[in-house]
Image 1: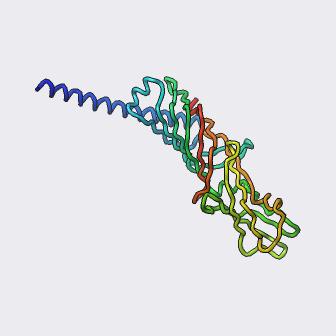
Image 2: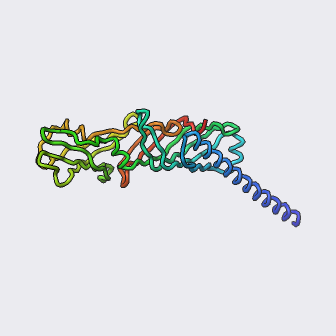
Image 3: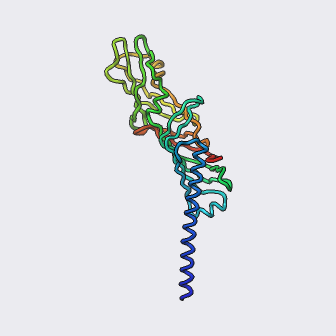
Length: 246
C-alpha cells in the first residue's frame, strides 16, 4: 500500500509538471504568433491570440493546431482604390485546423469564421458628402446613419430648397447586404415623400443608395453577411486556406 501511495504521488506530481510545462509552452507560442501577426499585417497594437485545446504539446508535435482565436482592434482595411482606408472597430476570427512550420514563420488555417464591426460614421464616409441636385432648385445629402431596427439602417437625408433647408432630415429605412464577398451595399427599401416635394426616384437613389468596398482583411478572409446593429453594422466573415503568418 505504501508503494502504491508513492506511485500515485509521483503520477500526480508528474501530471502537474506536465500541465505547467504545457501552459508555459502555449503562452510562449501565443505571444510569438501575436508578434508575427502584428508584423505581417502592419498593426499598431499587438493582437489577441488564443490557442485552444489541451494538451498543446501534442498539437505542437503534430504540426497542426485544432483551433486558434484571433482578435484585432482598430484594424484598417482597404477600400479597393489602393489609397482609402476604413476602420474596423473589432475583428475576431476563429481559425480551425492551423498547419504551421517548425519555426512558426508560416501558419495556414483550413477554415475561418468570425465577426467584424464597422461604425456608422466610418460607413458614412463613402456616401456623397456634398449636397447633390435631385430636382430643379432641390439638393440633398446624407447627414447620418443609425440603427433602424429589424436589421435595417436608418438613413437621414437633408433636403435643401431655394427657400432653405427642411426643418428636419427625412428618414429612409434601408436594407444592407454583402455583395461579391468584399462590398457592403446600402439600398433604400422605399423612398418617402420629401416634405411634399416630388422627386424622381432614380435621382434620389443616387444619394440614398451607396456601397463601401472592404478588402485586404487578414489572411484573405472575406465578407459573408451583414446586419445593422446599435452602433454600426455587424459583419460575418469567412474563409478557407487562411494565411495567418507567412
